[in-house]
Image 1 (cartoon, one colour):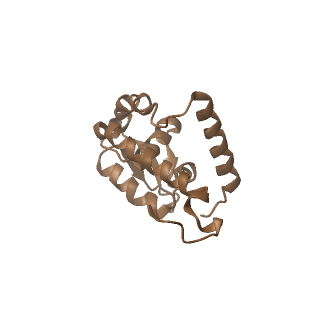
Image 2 (spheres, rainbow, N blue to C red):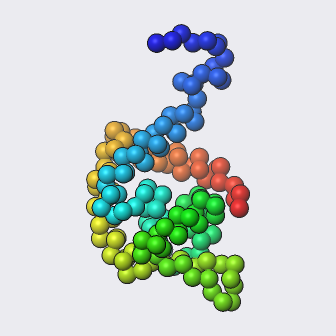
Image 3 (cartoon, rainbow, N blue to C red):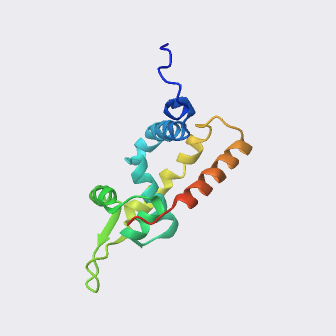
Amino acid sequence: MNETQTNEPCLRLEDQLCFPLYACAKEVVRQYREPLKPLNLTYTQYIVMMVLWEFGEMTEGEIGKKVHLDSGTLAPLLKRLQKAGYINRVRPESNENKLILSLTPEGEQLKKLAIKVPSQMQGCIPLSEKDMILLRALLNRALACMNIDRR
């Protein structure tokens, strides 16, 4: 292993909070690939579908706020979900700037397969239940404090 070239803690990877957050998130998303294969969804598509399964019809902006994605990232993802037959994207005549999203019957049916995913993912982060609850609470608190509407 190479010796460190700096004495500056702020420049050492091991002293950063952002790196383990990034690496853990990347690994969890990677682990979702296998359970999501039968659904033909990426992780990001899955979280959008979860929002629609939970809340029903929504605007693109509402979904973007829930999943923390901007329109530039969300729009192509929604087009792929529509092409797959899982969602409808409609611009109402009364407000053509709005894009209303809703589930198709196929998108509703997909929920039956999706119900299996959380149990398949259980244990992907090897922490005790108590630590998982604490981790989720800390991450949700940090996210709430950082949540600045940038749209």
